[in-house]
Structures are given as structure tokens and as C-alpha cells.
Image 1: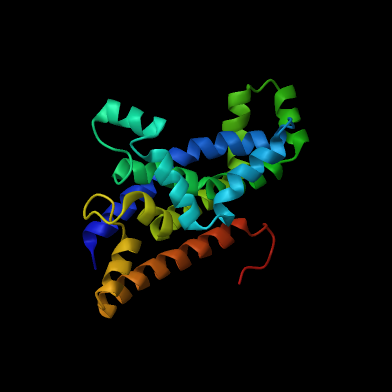
Image 2: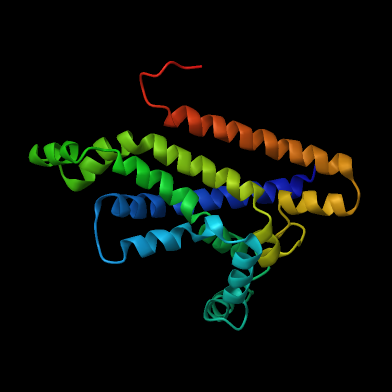
Length: 222
């Protein structure tokens, strides 16, 4: 087991969840209840990472994070380091790759809240913030939890974009999925198998959590 790569993957996953949670709540809530021009285009753009090949998405992100790009130059000016092939670059790429996993479950959860529930709370004099924290968020919590779990696990297993944007720098950009690939390249099947089993167990456990929280109340549990 490459513990350094595992620790880096966990750090990347935690950072992705922490940064995407407020963004997912805000965007998911807006898409669920507001109708505006270009809404369908925005939804399609946010869903693109689901259908784009990782190498294609990774290529555009690498170009966008490169030293010749506006984002790359700004990052170098602020930190003195390049955005591509760095942990910060991996975090930025992970945020873009995981947008649909973070936003779509939350959007569906907010859409399931009846509009008259929010209207009744407003009629009772509750402030918008109070309605959100005391009514909307508890009702949408299963979707929020699913979004966080899916984002976390998808980040752990992401390979193509991570390789394109970060390469395989030990302790900096070499995640657990890259470590598995490197072990296979070295014909270390036992080492690759150990790490693959760990990711499989994590992914399976995450899917159990997602399905358990999305099951409607009142159904017979298996």
C-alpha cells in the first residue's frame, strides 16, 4: 500500500467536498426553483464532465492551467508556483470534474420539497435563512449526503484528469489511482491489487450509503 498516495487522495477528496458543498447547495437550490433564460444550457454545461472523455477534459484543463493561460499566470504571480502539476491544480481540476456529482443530487433533493411548504413557512414569519436551515436543508439532507459521498469517492478514483493535470509527482500529485497504474506498469500485481481492493471497498460502501439515504420512507428495508 502506498500510504503517501492514499493520504494525498484523501486530502484531495476532503478538499473537494468542503469546497463543493456550499457551491452545490447554492447552485442546486437555484436550478431547482428558479426559471431563467439559459437555465438548460447551464445544466448541460455542468453535466459535461459526466460525458466528456477524461483525456479530453484533462487536456482542456491542462491548457487552461498552463503557464501561458490567464489562470496560470495569475497563480504564478500570487504564489510563485505553477498551477499545472501541483496539488492546487489537482484541487481546481477536481472541482470542475465533480460539479455534476455535487450539484445534481442536491438539485433533485430541493426539487422534491413541495413549494407550499416553503410558502407556509414564509407566511408564519420565518426568515429566508431560517426556512433554509430549519426546513429546506433537513428535507434535502439525503440528497446533500449523497452528493458529498459521490464527490468524495469519485475524487478518490479519478485517474485520467489527475494524470493529465498533475502527472505522477510523489507526495505532490501522485494519488492512489496513479499509484495503482504505476504498480501495474512495474508488474507489481500484489501491490496494485491491495490498493484496488481498498478503492473497491470504499466505492461499494459509498453506494450503500447513497442507496440507503435515497430510499423513500415507508418502504420495506432489505
